Length: 266
Image (cartoon, rainbow, N blue to C red; front, side, top):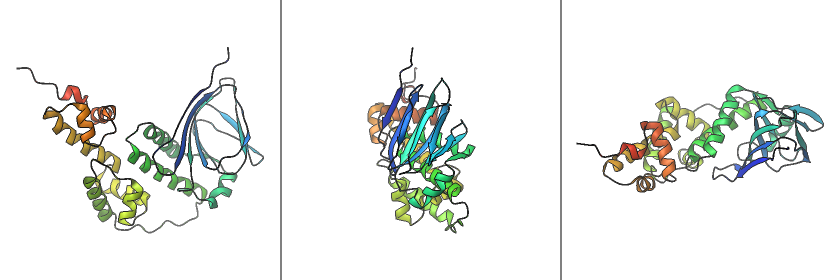
């Protein structure tokens, strides 16, 4: 019996992300086709064989594949088990057309750190409300991809990192409930998003999205102890919904909001 394909696709509110696509195929083979967007691909199980610009390539587990826009390619499973893949389609926000040639020459990148970060990006993209985390991870991923594709480019001289970190922390505190996008924060402080993330993490030992979530959880604890229900607390503290609050609350506190606020027995 032939296994049916498993497909999940959605749009994300993260700037630069055109589509997120997860699939498990056993027998399906893609014909030659093109995309208008960059295809950032990882394979979690099995392997894919594909042709790009008349050259054959493959995708073992530890590889991140970056297929450029407008260049024809196909794809088929290597074994009868098929393959399970996760794909993010990106517009030209993070990767310019000047990188297409380098991507054609070397689309498969063996980089364990990059592979880990792409997996973390997919996890964040799968959780509404975690857009700041996804933006931060995508910014660092794009920076690493550009380094692979343009390794001889000299790094820009960083600005005063402690001052940038302090300014970003103030912005996050000011936008604790409504949130602020990484691109908007970078525009306000006149810094590159990747440098902003690195400056903050270096100064405080925590990523911007982790700082924001920990502050929201801290505020949620106070409201829960006042007797407000978790659903109301989630809305009041900037979480997407109650399940979003529960996931992060348990991560930072160790228990769910309901158990945390359970009345003490005399």
